[in-house]
Amino acid sequence: MKQKVMSGVGLLLVVGLMFLAGCAEPVTPTTPASRDYMSARVKGAISDFVAAKPSIKKMLASAYGYAVLPSIGSGALVIGGSEGRGEVFEHGRMIGYCKMSSASIGAQIGGQSFSELILFQNAATMAAFKEGETTFDARASAVVAASGSGTAANYVRGVLVYVLPLQGFMAQAAIGGQHFTFAPLLSN
Image (cartoon, rainbow, N blue to C red; front, side):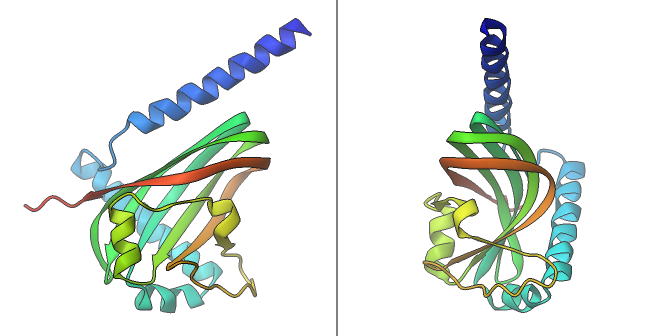
């Protein structure tokens, strides 16, 4: 029994260290190659969202702005965390980068990755996102962009979130929220 408890503590420590290591990485890609890689992944994620739910194309065109995080990794064993990076667009033009991080505690186990698309209905919700005032639980407020999905999508407090599962499985009944950091493009 003592061996199992020590193994569980070790696993929690590893998950915690992985989460903290991800939090230490900068929001903005640091090299031209990493910026190009991020841009290609964001374009691919947008294509995947539109392929899964074609109405997203029209929503992107009508949104005041949006953020695309092509891959968010999440893992948990009682204590969990997730992290992902992406690009932010205003009126269809890329204006900067974002990083999402979250921590949760509760009955949860597993690991998964998913893409996330966050639409902003107006200037106020976009400004709140850029100021780091947007925090929510995507598990509770997101619409799964699944092929053939008939789920009606509506803005809630000016924000609409779509998620697209990539791989893995996580069972959870946990409390936690996503927090976002925005970094504007530097002028050349």
